[in-house]
Amino acid sequence: MPPMPASTVSPELARSVWKATEPLHSHVYFAPQRLDVYAAVGLEPKVMGYFASRSAPLGAVGPEAVAATFYNFNPELIASVIPQAWGVATPDAVVGARTATADLSLRALLGEEAIGSAELAEAAELARTAAEGAAHHAHGRPLFAGLTGLGWPKEPHLVLWHAVTLLREFRGDGHIAALLAARIGPLEALVTYAASGASSASGLRKSRGWPQAAWDAGVAATAERGLVDVAGPDGALSATDEGARLRAEVEARTDELARPAFEALGPDGCERLITLASPFTRTVREAGILPGTRKR
Image (cartoon, rainbow, N blue to C red; front, top):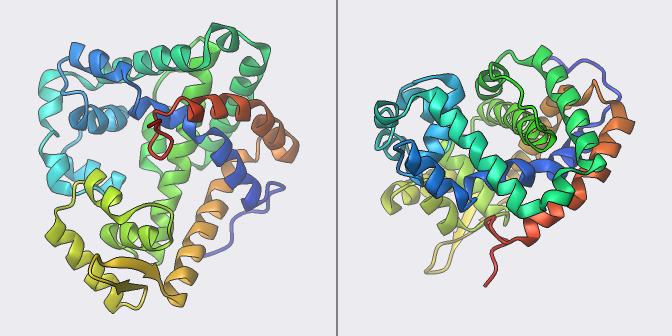
């Protein structure tokens, strides 16, 4: 694969922007407000709500397209709710419901003072600049490209949410390209991620809808490839040297592929966005609605 065009934004800085803004996107999948909002348009709000709301910018696509673009979810789980979702709510209605969820959730999480702050408005403009610049690199990025077809919200907190959602899907599409180049399939991606210690195997298996037998087969195939070791009666996973090397290579390539999204900002703009977004992100994390941050 030829090198990416030269950029003043380093891959490490592109990763830092993602880490500083990701919760401002992902809270929408766990916001308690989604339950009533999605139900109001006819969706079962959890499994159906997730797959329909994230894929709605692509239109009324079938389960095959959703499975391909989401990559590591069990296709049977997706087929249990798609295309049924489009029979009860149009993609436009679902996009509207997702935006309404983001509005209600951010207002509840951040508070009206933060929502109306100059800092949030500046962060929104910086993130929008990056997202609009990323549109010049949309080829091969279907989830990102689908979002570019939507209009921009008017209110700054929704501009920020929409922009970081675009940037997240831009990165995610690149991550799938990196996995494919490394010949890491959907289950192998989950298994190697769990073996890295970044997340629990049981949590990944359940959240992605894989039955135990399929998961065990995926673990066996990944171990046979020499990427993970399995130890103990509970099947604890650990990365082999080769597995750790390959996973690090995928992450580095993902950072490299994400970099063009930030060319319009440059290093100073990226650092400013991190500075502005970090307090809002911290507030979202401290609310405890995201996996791994939930209050006991």
